[in-house]
Image 1 (cartoon, rainbow, N blue to C red):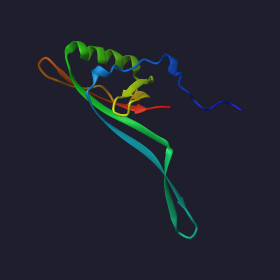
Image 2 (tube, rainbow, N blue to C red):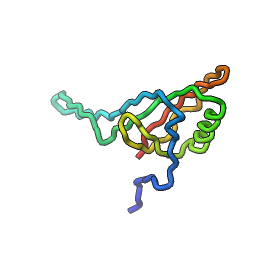
Image 3 (tube, one colour):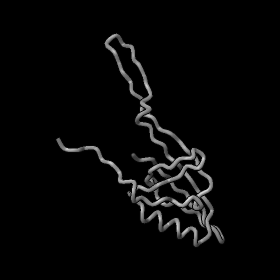
Length: 119
């Protein structure tokens, strides 16, 4: 029987530098399982085993820090990396799920990205 479970080798993953972001929000998405019965009743349960976290973060960066983050982003588009959630005190394996969003200003750029947890 073929192995259809894809695992990530976490030993060789890079870590997104924590100093490249300061403000972020976290959301957790859970799949809802709905069971419908012949008598018309239904039961809804949250499948907590399939929940995934996602993070949106942004920061105003100098040109050199913006370039550092951009190089990390370009090197990891579609590839997993470590991401530290400092509020949870844990490291997660994540991938970028958004495009590069940047708003320019004199001397600094506001960069926004999204990361989703992968297993």
